[in-house]
Length: 147
Image (cartoon, rainbow, N blue to C red):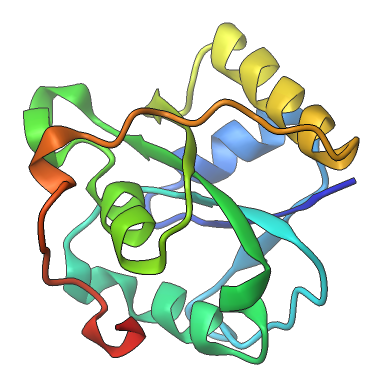
């Protein structure tokens, strides 16, 4: 099974991961340096860049950046273009596909869709990716140490 890592600030992302029933590693501010040691999907909330230091530390640790196979982004659709901004920016910066986007802690349909994505990737099948938002098709400034 493809592994899952997630970062949660307010608890919405953690609540979603718990609802999926899938085993996942929680990235914490106290100990972000964790070696995933295998291919994984990252589930991330949407916050300003300066709030993502632990996530950056996690991705920079050992081979985590190279083992990242896809992103699932969460956020609040009321923020329009800023919805799921962290996943969008990571996708562009690291050239990793966004596999799914959800709002807040997700719906029952979101839970099922994410389980399906994990199952497909675990079987070696390709998962559909979300079309890259047009506002991110050019250059962006985020996590510049990855370029």
